[in-house]
Image (tube, rainbow, N blue to C red; front, side, top):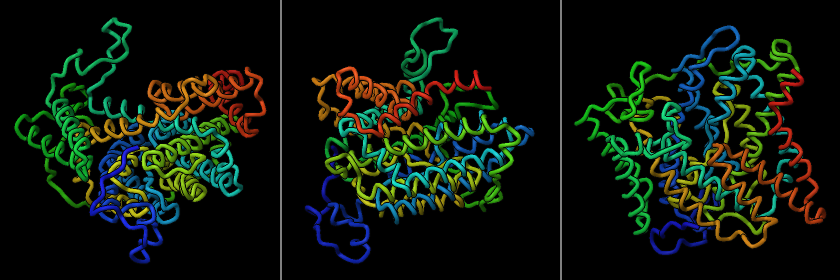
Length: 490
C-alpha cells in the first residue's frame, strides 16, 4: 500500500510527549506534520457534505408537507461531523472521519419522511443508532467483523477503491450518465456527448495529472497540494470565464461547476443556526406509519450502517497498513462504538445518520495514521459552521482529484487475493465490481458474502464457514429481497 514519504528520516518509535504517547503517533511510524496534512486532506475531500446534505434533506417534504430549513441543516451537519470526528480520534484513535451518510440521507428524505413527520423519521435514525451501539457493546458487531475471511476484507477495500474512483469521476463530470433520449444501450460516457468540452472538466484533468505527478515524485502533501492547486485554477477560470453553476434556476447547465462555484464569497463569517438540534421523536412513527413499515425502515438503515462502516474501516486501515493478520484495525470495538453513537447523534440533530467516510483514505494517503488527524478534520468542520462561505469555494472538480488518486492506491491491494482459488476469487470479484456498479458498499459486501457461503457449501466445506456468516448471509438475502417482501406484507 501507499506509504507517505518520511518528513525527516524515519520517525522514531519512542513517544516524544504525552500527546504522542496517547495517540501512538511515533509508534505507528507517523509524525505530527503528517497527521495535520492528513487531517486537512480528509476535510477538503469531504467538506462537500456541509453543502450536499442540506440540499438532499432540504429538498424533501414529510407527510405534513413540511421542509427542513437549509441554513439550519448546514450548521447541524457541520456540528455533528466535527464532534463525531473528534470523538473518533480521541476514543477510536483511528484516522476515520464521520459525517452525514450519503445514501442514508436520501433514504430518510425520500422514503421515510414522506410516511411520517421529520421528527419521527429522525427518531428512527436514533433508534437504529442505539441498536447498533447495543450490538457493539455485546460484542456481536465486532464478532461479525472478525468472522469475515481476510481475503474478503481485502476485496472490500479494493471494491471501495473503485467505488471512490467512480464517485470522483462522476462528481467531476468526467463520466456522465447518457440521457435516455440518446437511444443507446451504453449507460455512461466521457464528458458531454463523449467529449471533454467544458472548463471545469479541464480543471479536473489538469488537477488530476498534477496530483499524480506529485504522487509519483513522492512529494509530501501531494493530494492536499493537488486539491488546493485545482481550486486556485478553478477560481481563475471562473473569474475569467464566468461559467456559473451546473444548475441555474432549476435549468441544467452541463458545462457549469458541480456543487460549488469557485469564487470568493462576499461574506466570510456567518452565525450558525442550531434550531434543529433535539428535534426528534422515537414513538409517534409506530402509530403513524405502522409497525411493519417502521421495522422495514429500521432494518434497512441498520444493514446499511452496519456493513458500510465495516468496509470503510477495513479500506482505510488497509491503505495505511494498519490491519493485523486477521484484517482487523486497532481498537476495532471503540471505532464501531463511536460510529454507532454518530448514527444516533445524526438523528438527534436532524441531519440523518452520521457514518464513517471513505474519503478518510485521502488523509491516510497523506500520511495520517492516528486519531490526531481527526482533531484537525473535526476542528475544521466546527469552523465550517461559522465559515460556511469559505467551505463552498472548493468545487467537485477540484476535490474529486483526490478520490481518483486514492482509488488507485487502494486498488493495488488486489494483488494479495488468490485468484486461482475460485472459492474466494468469485466472491471477491463480485464484492469488488458491485460496489462501483451499484453505487453501494453494502450491496457489494452482501453479494460477496452470500456468494462465499454458497461456494463453500457447493464444495462441501460447510465447516470452513464461520457460524456467524450464515446469519449474516441470511440477513443480506432479506435485505436484497426487501422490495418483494414489502409488496407482499404491505
